[in-house]
Length: 387
Image (cartoon, rainbow, N blue to C red; front, side, top):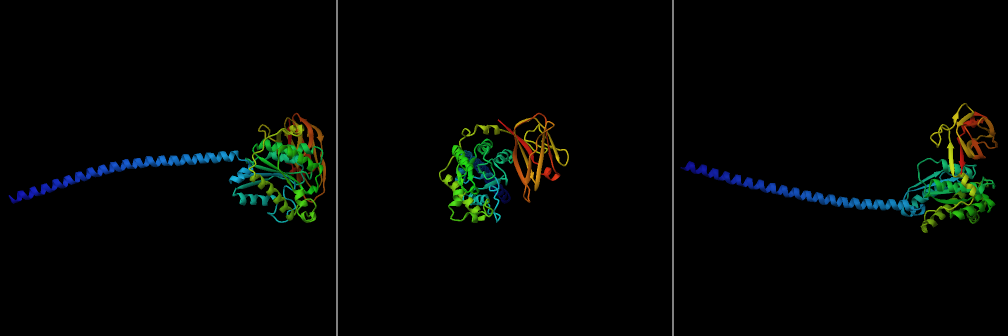
């Protein structure tokens, strides 16, 4: 009997234990289900929140991108956006005359703008010493770096002749406008002119027409209280002290326009109708060209280059003056067309871009023959412009 009672007690215990396990299991299952549900709800809520944040960020990014796209150079600086600056000029544009590296007016300008406006500044200088405005037009047209420039600073006049100057100078402005429609422009009146020469007055009237701000370094030199000879060691190129004046003059024009939130430039009709002959442009380099079907010039021997092409208009050449006498014979369709000869009385070489014909028609071939291999090595190519 006692034995039976013990069994019963044991079974009863088991049943209770079993019941407890079942209840615990059910509760656990309920907790897991509820937990999962809550996790799902949390996850949905989190996703929603993330998506809202993403949308807000996206809207913000879109707003920023739109602002960046609509901003002028000056507004971009004010908003702290990255900016790209192009300098196109002669030796003064290139910073010749500087005694200490880093003191070039444009180097000082670049670091100043970066520090002052907390912007990243990319500055590209395509200036070439000894060159006149036509070179600035060509250099602008052949820039091929996939950068969209926000500001272009033009620095020419010293090496230009008066004849055709107005049209050539304006062609740089039109080339910048055509290539970089959103680009602001600033023009420099070069201190080396000492006074407001006919060329300087020409720049003033063109810039006035285009509403281009002018940096007057003639006035800046005159008002500096420092003798001209202390600002330029050779009478033309600004030394370190002169570079400082250039930098400060450019800087103050930029600051003034940032302050007044100057917008992008609007396009206007040309001053010189003759500038339209520069509207279209083709470049023929060595072995490559800006028009895919043309392969550019081929070097057939040490001194000779030939090009198969059909072209007409203003013809320009890009080559290098070596010390002494430089001669390039240009043949068009088999007969001699022109042979520019230059005596370059310096102990250095210098790349030049100049017009060699105002109106040339090529039916199928151009050949250029140089005096020496050294001169031929400095040949960069030719170009045509037409309306």
